[in-house]
Image 1 (tube, rainbow, N blue to C red):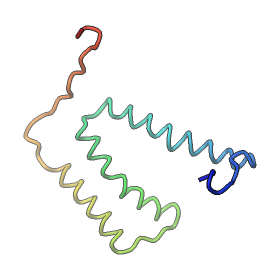
Image 2 (cartoon, rainbow, N blue to C red):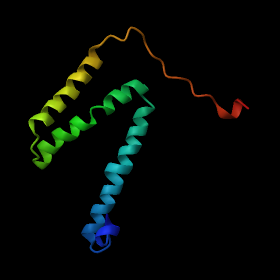
Image 3 (cartoon, rainbow, N blue to C red):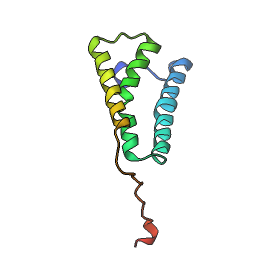
Length: 108
């Protein structure tokens, strides 16, 4: 975006601070925490939780930024919530254990 608009990230200390914050907090820290979470839960649980991201983003946009969702936006958010509730309450019938990761050094 900066290359197209001609704006300089170093034009002011405030612009640099915003750019640094956006790079470190939501991007870097978000991916690091997501990766750490993946080591502690199953892949199916992580996938299910990731499906809630659009609904959470929509609700946060309403609460934090003051956005207004249309009827279809609220229906979509409710649909995501209902689907996640069904997934959470559905009996799985079996316990799933994480797959063992082979040690590369010993499998030569």
